[in-house]
Image 1 (cartoon, rainbow, N blue to C red):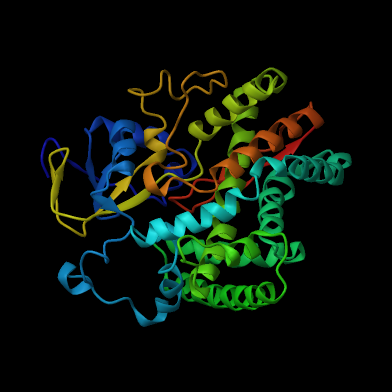
Image 2 (spheres, helix red, strand yellow; image 1 turned 90 degrees about the horizontal axis):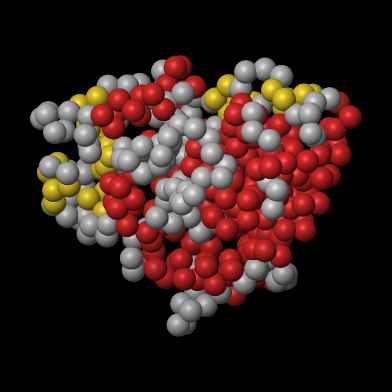
Length: 406
């Protein structure tokens, strides 16, 4: 490459990197504003200023096929065996650009905010207490399985109006679908993701039909009724939106709770001080999300030929925005590797930025603001029972388990 844009080789499945990617991010940032990640085959940006700016830069998008065909870009056709997965993804808010994205987001936001997220606080509090009641007497538990996972899964299921007794099945389908975004996916993973997608779609199609006939006070019913300037969600868009909300509505939050609890325990901070008030809790949660984010890499496509940081990009080129690295950039955060729950101006890029800013961020924040203080208040002697282990699922960054005792 060049002195200003060097290449870098680092397997995302290397055990040392999986367990602690932050020293590698330091070396990546030392290379300059951008580097070519050979293992992925695209340019990556690890600095906060670049990531924050590129997330908002309308010359990049999550999709490029609205401005060019696959033939024009020199892309092969999607393999037939994964086509069912991408047929569903084609209707996803996360993967579309304006004007389709604008229409979908407007309709979904109207329905989503109509539920007044803050109204969920008592339910999240009751759920957190009920879960702790269930394992408190045992003296030891895997917090990820017993606490961090049930809270967001049950909340999003109840919000959508999906039966809570389906939670385990929804979780299974979600994990198998999300595996499509991991590094070095295999044909076995692809086939399994397609089976999960088809099962998920069949379930949601039946449930949407039921809600059309008998609307309720739930998000699916609100989405069915949502209308803006005569526009409604199509059935396929509605089904994909429900799947996206179920997947995104728990996947990252589960690991944000797990990573956050681990960070507090390892740092040895006093939870009673960290979560001493509503304002302190809100700030502490933002710092925990910055310190060890559950999503470390997000991609964009160049929508035109352009140059960024000395890198010439062609329309259709993919770039990597390194959220996890940006959140530890010393140019943006003083002493970034230190957990400081009273840190001022802690705004990170963990929820993204720009038109694709996470639509569920208010709900995720609320779940963290309730779940973490409740955990430490109810179990004041909480401590790690074994070394936490991160799962090999990059670019996701979350624990396999978090075994604690009290």
